[in-house]
Length: 127
Image 1: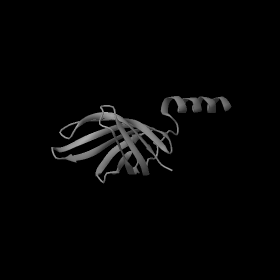
Image 2: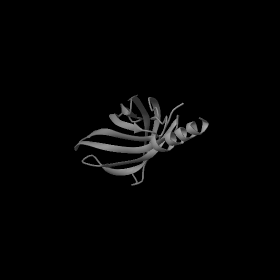
Image 3: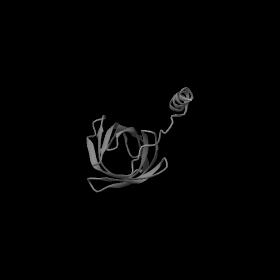
Image 4: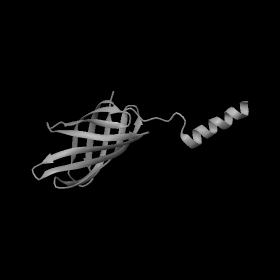
């Protein structure tokens, strides 16, 4: 009986991830993004709501600009898209990253559209 339980536990952990779940990103995060292309940095707050693996929210920059956010969470991986409106039209900034703890996320971003061409690193934290 004990041996059967050990085998089941090993199969569960190795094959199907037994109990693995998505990180919870719901809440308000401080946000910082720094360009690797020489465009400086942006700070603000990232307010997210999560339902299952779907994420929606708002990025509010310290300069007063606000943008809609949508995306998903898969385990510790975070994929967010920020809808940008600019004088040239509309664009999207894609954030790819990970939840490193319940209170920190980090990753890279890229945009390449009518609004701007840029890439860099981002971090987010919450109390």
